[in-house]
Length: 249
Image (cartoon, rainbow, N blue to C red; front, side, top):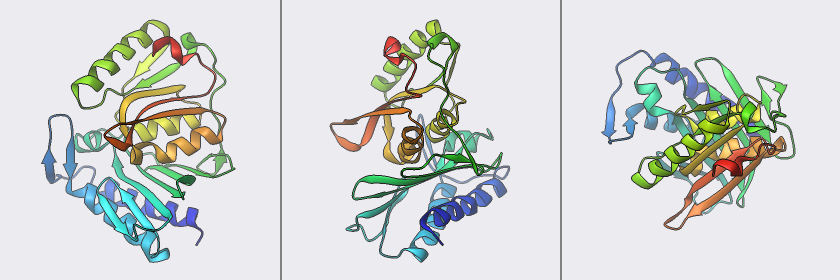
C-alpha cells in the first residue's frame, strides 16, 4: 500500500465511523463558548492513527487530538479527524477528515474526505489534485465581483473583529460571501474551483495542511503568517491566485 493509499484508506474508514454516528446522540468531552470536543474526535483520530502506524510504525502523528508514533521522525502525518466538529454535532452535513504528510517540513501528500457526499480530494507533491479520481484545478475568475469568498472568524475577540471586518468589505465587493465551518473543505473547494478565496486570522496547521498542498499544486496561492505564541497557528489567505484579494484585507 502506497502512502497515499494508506491516507485514503484511513480517511475512508474514519468517514464510515462518522457517517454511521451522524444521526446518533453524541458524547461531548468538552464544551467551550465557540467550540466543541466530541468523543468521536478522539475515536476518529485513534482509528486513523492505527491505520497509518500499522503501515509506518516509524513515522510521527501530529493531530488535533494529540501526538503518536516517533516524534523524532522527519516523516510526520498531520491529522484533523473531524474538521467541522460543531457542524457535525448539530447535524449539519458539512465536515470532513483531513490528512496530510510532510517530510522534513515539506508537504508531500494530502487527502480531504467528505463522507456525507462521498467526495474525496487527493494530491501528491508535483501532481495535480484529484476529486474522486478526476483532476481538478482552481477557477479562472479574476474579478472580485464574480467571486465567492469564504471568511472564517476564529474563536477569540481579535480574530472575530478582523473576520467580521473582512466579511463586510468582501460583501461589498464579491458576488457572495460564505462562513461554512470547515477550513479544510473550504480549501478543497478552492482547489476544484467552487470557491475563489479563504481568509482567516487564526487557524491551526491540521485544518489547512492538506488544503494548502492542493491549492498550491493547481497554481493557486496560500499565504501563511505564523502567530508569535504558536508556530503551528496561522493567519491565512488562500486564493485561486487570480483575484485581487488585497482589496478586502
